Length: 112
Image (cartoon, rainbow, N blue to C red):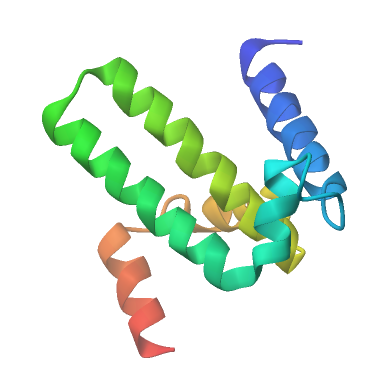
């Protein structure tokens, strides 16, 4: 398995672990606590983590950006699991956009 395959495999495993916490005990699992808190709590955490990535990018080291990015990705994956979205769904959307100008892609979303 090459490095890219290992990364994709790890993301799939992490997603499965996250999804398995749904309905779990919030006293023993932070992920279960997020699921219990619902979409509002999940969205708030994503906003918080996104802000921390921005602050780290502007004021901290690349290592800090990596750490905060990992937090953001984890919280996104919790939201995906809540909504029945898999990492493959997101990657497929990115593949569909490949070769399309970012400006064109944004304009097509604005028209919808």
